[in-house]
Length: 150
Image 1: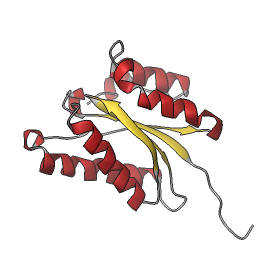
Image 2: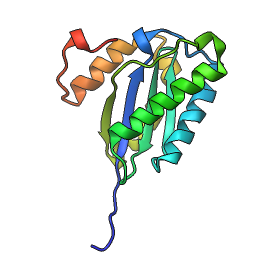
Image 3: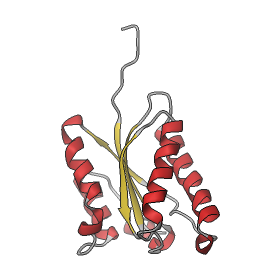
Image 4: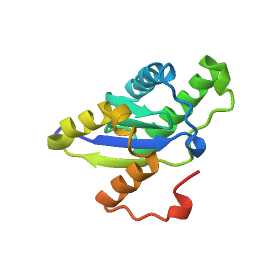
C-alpha cells in the first residue's frame, strides 16, 4: 500500500486536580472549544468534548503522525494555561497528573458521543470516581486504587 490509512478513535478522560469542582457552566463551553482548537493543531480533530464540574471527556480522532501521550500532554497543558489566563479565580488551576484513554470502534462512536453529550445529566446521580472505575473495569485495565486519584 502506498499510503498510510488510519482510524484511531480515542475516548480520553481526566479530572481536575483533586477532583475540584471548578469547571462550572460558564467555563465548560469555552474550555471545550479551546481544547478542540488544540486538537485541530495536532491533526487530531475533536468529535465531541464534554464533562462536568470536575472532569473532562474528549472523544477525538488521533492523528497517525502523533503519539497519544504527546497530544494529551499538549491538550492538558495548553488548556490549563488558558484557564489560568482567562479565569482569574483559577490562577492555581491544574489537571490531575494522569489520564485514561480508550480505543473506540467506529461502530461504537455514536454511543460514545451520546454518552459524552449527556454528562451533566449522568453526573446528577453518579460520581466521577465511580464512572472511571467502571470504564477501567469494562476495558480490562488493571489499576491500584491508591494511585488512581490525585
